Image (cartoon, rainbow, N blue to C red):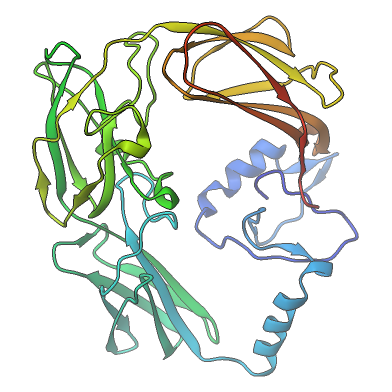
Length: 378
């Protein structure tokens, strides 16, 4: 299991497995949990099934719709099907459902002595119904795009589905120069790219970022097509040494005012020049972590985004040194319950508290109220 998912002895569950995608980790997982024996007895042998909170597994009491589908398929089996999705790749995360879909991709399905052709729809999805069980190779082609693999291998079970998740990349490029506030070149500055659309922002192109050279110049290649924001320190966050707020093209520290870069496949957008503001000062922030009734919440962990190290004197009060003119988000987490899993104490339940520190100057003080409980579904 993953993500501290727990299964209680005596209860029935519908299990949805991750399949073989992480089979190489099975042995490591067993070793971490406590070896091949428990209490002097050897663990049961047999097939290893990996499941977790994201896999669809659930107690039988909550699985009526899923069971109805499975039982209907058992009574009146459906023909085998190949389906999949094509999305923009980023050379780091690989295929990810946060990435934009790519429409009108030519899909080839090769196997069982024939080749089937289809195209992706507006959501980047495709379906090839009524195929014979067996092994297939799925290819994807679109002008100015290239797949990260020459072919995706899919095995289709009888009356089941084979799934291909395909990523396409292009050689779109961004180049320009970063200058300091006085007009001189800014060397060793991280320049990064992120999707402009909020639903895609989690996908950063970390391997496609760059650091400026001695002349402040940069070039980022192998980007997908789409709408992007470009800037300095926008992904990695500002450093206490440079003390430069995240700065977007064209020359704004406010993300909502940043200009969106529209990249076409294989296009190079030149002269994406960024002028940094003057270094800003620092400010001290006193952080208090409290329960809703005002009591100190001891043993809480506080995380800050963009990241800065904390200077906690004890578990419920401390200080952070942050930059002026930068907004910070504070998140506190306190584990309230632990479960014994094979002799190890694993965090199970927790409560969170959140607060936002607006950009400003001078000392400040915030309180995190721990009022957002969360527990693992069991």
